[in-house]
Image 1 (cartoon, rainbow, N blue to C red):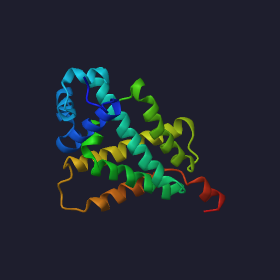
Image 2: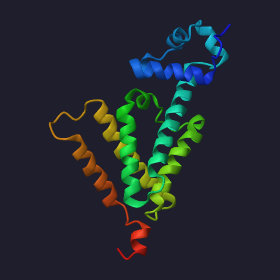
Image 3: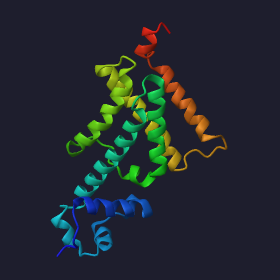
Length: 191
């Protein structure tokens, strides 16, 4: 019999504990079952297999990231919102490198809802720049590639030269902001 309180969410919580302590490759059904104090087959009442658990972990991480991004951009627009967005994304990756590494980056139907929440936040931030349709998607892809690439390189020790990373990230942020059209508010104010 499964331990009282064991549920899909509780199993994801246990997987995240393992990820935070040992990294994403340490997550196995056996390791999660050991944390739960149950035999591995008891997990199958709550998750079909490791692939489903990895998907659930990805959804949780995407939701955490979306909540953080939504929180920091709320009430801001234009460059201020974009800067807050980029800093929060990087901050999440640096604070939770294992969780971020565990997040499935490929587009999959089972991740569409959670991924859609992230995309909606990016599109809302870019809306101030008058970007719509394909232009907004292109800008979203560029923004994701820039933030993801920098943050992953940072957490994996990919920047070895003795120059301040925050200064480098500020330059990247400014390059992104400068590369976008002027925000619609700036046009309305005559700036």
